[in-house]
Length: 147
Length: 173
Image (cartoon, rainbow over all chains, first blue to last red; front, side):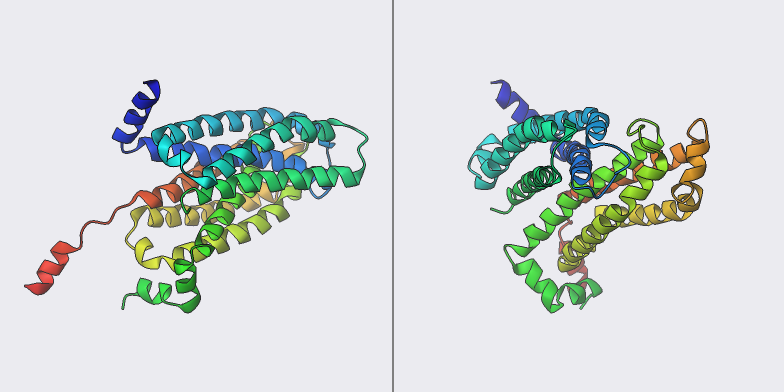
């Protein structure tokens, strides 16, 4: 019932879907972009003036704001036409990557970034996996329109 | 043949348009660059506004992220150029596309004005006890311009050209 009401509201308002997309894109730039900064620091190729732990602490609130907005706007986009998304293989790929990426970010990634004595090899591996996961989420999202 | 037709008829641009895989991969690359490198623009602006990364100096943030933003910009613009030119006939009448290109040129003007004042002048900004207004103006404008770019890029997909019928009618008459 509620879902139908939301879908109707979205589909009967011409600008609702594009507006949600206009929140979705800057919000993933903020969330993924801040995670990328930590990744580049773990790789030792940017912002070396600060430890990964401090950089994580500085960027974490912005990552969270971005994630909340991107997930909320994404949920709105999904609710506008659930049947179409549920029949789309790229949608499942994206959601699977997203869940893994979020869990990874708040467990392994955070632990390694916050720890003062991680070997550079491990730090680099963790950063590369993080980058790969988030890029996969973005590609999964784009391919929803093409499969 | 119109200019936009001649552009999109170039062999490799036709190949991009007709490929089921290349077009979405280019679009994905464009969007992944927004995620990875667009975030750097946002965070640089937030640092200039004094809202984040305050344990690093402005010099450190601007200097360290500059080469990465350049790499990202080159990939993003290349992908965007290929996307736009392979569908030139669709893009040519699209007002959102031209608005986006106008905003892009405003970003160029922003760089011409604020590079000497702010981005190449970070040591002076760091010496100042409070972040100077010019840095905050540069950051605020940058945020507005880049957020407009993201929204306009999305809106390009929603433009529906009017039917060509009236024009054909005049032609027949």
